[in-house]
Image (cartoon, rainbow, N blue to C red):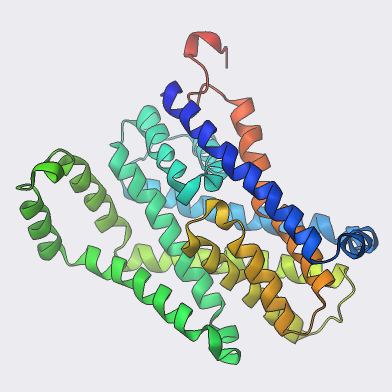
Length: 326
């Protein structure tokens, strides 16, 4: 597992470099001098509350993660170990297409014996339930700004199709049986069946409703955090600004995920800054807000994940067991 972990680490490097370039681009687009002044004048008393709301998001998403693990048969994994594996997955978001998150299935396999493919189904279910949650959060904003309807409908139909198809068990098993006769699929058929069995459990109506409800509340927390950032930058506080902040952060999360770019880098930032412009916010304030919210969400999570890796390197296969007394 150590070699797999090291390979993922190497794949993270381009994402981190790209992330730095995106942050630099934000500064330049918003006028470096003016953005610097906005950051300096920002009410930093807002930031502890913003980070607390980010942690609120992570906490509810962890509840969902642990709930999913119970559904796929992991009953005795210590909560602290489960939490470490959950937080340890944050840096994997900056790998291309988030493919690094497959490593969470490997970690679960090492700790519990759960087949890797079934562990990967947990990761996929997390992403789809989060996607549905932020879509529903952004619904009101899409009604106000109908130019976003095509993207909204496309993503919604795509996510719901995955959920619905997974529950049509006879059809899914028929497809798997037919696939077993195809040479290049036959080799991975066992993994495909494990992945499907996990998905079938995780996408049933009750589990999906529970997960999306948790996601709705958790991502609402980050939306409120974005509102506090706009407040700290001096914008007039009212309900419309709050609603718009939640919409912007939710819909930009969808755009970033749909882009398949590492951590949604570039796509999410452009969406946030662009949609803020719809509200009449100046480019410098939009760039400042984008920079601050991404630091308080994506990069804060990456930092927590890397810190968790450093504290428990053996758990994540970063060192051989004999090399680490932890």
